[in-house]
View 1: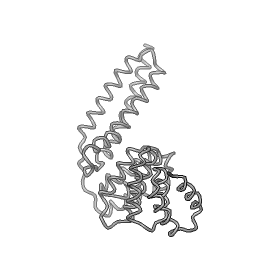
View 2 (view 1 turned 60 degrees about the vertical axis):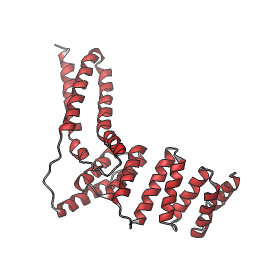
View 3 (view 1 turned 135 degrees about the vertical axis):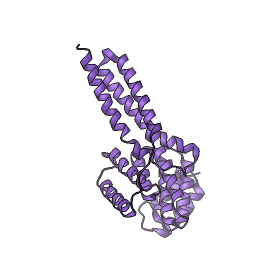
View 4 (view 1 turned 45 degrees about the horizontal axis):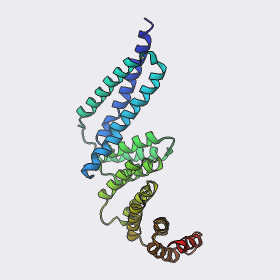
Amino acid sequence: MYDIIPLILICASLFIVFIIVVRKFPALANFDVENMPAEKEARFKEQIITGRMQKSLAKWKVRLGKIFGFIGGKIGALFHFTQKKLQEAKESYSVEKVPLPAEDKESMIKGLFSKNESLNDWENFEEKESKLIKIIEIDPRHAGAFMLLGSLYLANKKYEESKQAFAHVLKLLSNEEYGKQSEIYCNLAAVYRETGELANSLETIKMAAKLSPNNPRYIDSLLEISIMNKDKINAIDAFEKLLAANPENGKLAEFKKQIDELQ
C-alpha cells in the first residue's frame, strides 16, 4: 500500500511535465525555418523542440530518481513511455489556424514586444524566448523577432541557435537594408569570436564594415578581430579608418602598440 503512494505522486508529476511540454508545441512547431539550409534546419528545430524536451525530461528523471531510488526501474519505464508519447504528439501535431486579421496581428505583436522588453535576458530567458517564438508564429517573416532571438541566444551562450537565427535574418532582409545587414554581420562576428572561429569572425566583420564603412563600431571590431587573427595588413587598414572616423577613440594608442607587436 505504501509503495503505491510514491508511484501515484510520480505519475502525477509526469503528467504535469507532459502537459507543460506539449503546450509549447504550437509555437515551436510553427517556427519558420524553411528558408534555412537543409542541413541546418533539422538541427535548429531539433535543438529548440526535441532537444529542450529531452533535457527537461532527463533533468526530472535524475531528480525523481534520487528521491525515489527504491523504484528507479519503474520511474525509468514511465519516463520512457512519457517521452515516447511526447514524440508522437510532436510528430502528429498539425498547425491549422484561422488567419488573423492584419490589425489583430499587429496589436498582438506589439504587445508581445512590449512585454519582452521588460524582461531580463538572463533571469527570464525562457519567457523571453517563448514570446519571441510566439511573434514568429504570428508572423514567420518578422526579421526583428529573429534578430532579438539571435541576440537572446548570444547573451545566454547558446551559440549554435544564435548563428541559425542571425543567418535566417539575412535571408529575410532585402538587399537595400544595408544598416540591418551590417548589424547582423557584426553580431555573427561576435558569435564566431566567442566560439573561437576567428577566421569566420574576421570575414564576417569585414562584411559589416564593407556595408557600413563609416561606422566606428564595426571598424573598431574589425581592428580588434584582425589583431586577434594576427592579420597585420587588415589591422593597419582598419586602424587608419578608425583614426579617420573616430580620432578621439581612447583605445587607439593601445591598438597601435598591438599592431606594432605583430609579426
